[in-house]
Image 1 (tube, rainbow, N blue to C red):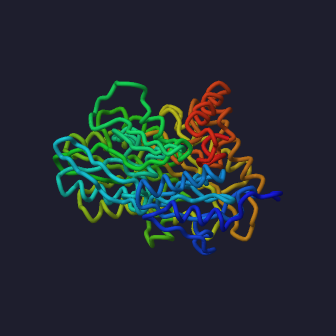
Image 2 (spheres, one colour):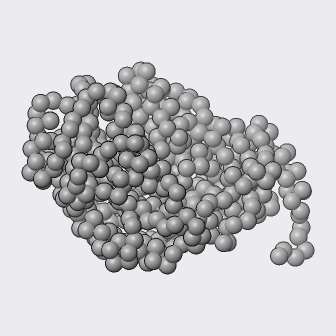
Image 3 (tube, one colour):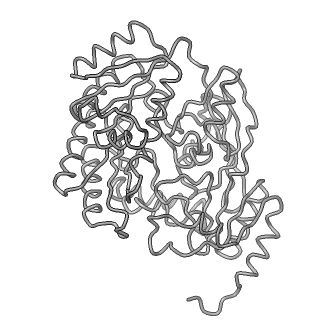
Length: 465
């Protein structure tokens, strides 16, 4: 309870509405509920936000930040609101600042190989527009059809094409960012090389809304590769054998665009969800692979490496409809696994040589704690997503789920990996900063946060604790 309050909510909202001149301020319960809560929200964050603001201009953003500074309120920036780590859920008395309506593609430059976009532009929409000019936007999060470029940059999103084209950070040339005090920074630029000054662009990529609000992103575009792409599937006795095959393909010179792994539990869930029959192929793991430029040499090399690692049921296609079906199969993995049960999907990444031992360990954890674990991931870059589930009528997270997560996190770090490959840190993992990064780095992160956001209003208690 706050004693002797200087301002009431009506006074704060009156001031906020006067500052937001182009956008819209919402305070109704329905809107706040939609943007304030996560099914895994902690007790401390479970109360309702104060307002939800759809910004349509930089002036609106500055107005929200001015209100937050004046009344000492937290600001949570949302884009398309697809975070899986409670990184963008509203919190008690916060102003939720949405940049989703700032969704214009400002420029596509084929000669310069870049696009300039506002943060609300959907990843897949940018890719479609670029392809009309013979270019494409490479980063392909599983949320490509629904996630925004601003959110991708704020979380350093990865995805299925990272194995060849890198994560979001590898495709961002420049940013415009508004700081907590209202100043705008123009970072990076339009050149593929840039060595002047500190690399502040990459400081803000992956900062999860804790250092500033991204208002513009300049990204690389690449020419659509010549030749015919191909996709295919192969099956293995288990995920460990699949990981060994992937390690060889990864360093073979084939430069695959996608190397996606699905375990037997995940395949079975997809068959139920899609009405397919992939599980009938047998085996304990399925590999979905893609190359941008197929040839007889590429396909024969792929087949040789798969055969060497005892793959079965190898199929390859260049048919557009069949490739789209395989792409959709991978994208539907999450709703298939999540359907009808509580879940936590994790996001560890490790050196490629340690992927097979990690697959073994995940199986051991499931057997030791009697848990059903659905394991999938971007095997080509060492990123694995074990999903732990429990009955929908059990409202609290079972102790053995938490124990399994701790076991897998510690094993990941022991193998030289990271416990957040692409989903960011948010609220769920911010207590692990000291464990993964060490005390010195943990302190420096807090010093950077204090320098850029001295009042601590930007997405507090997220990214770093």
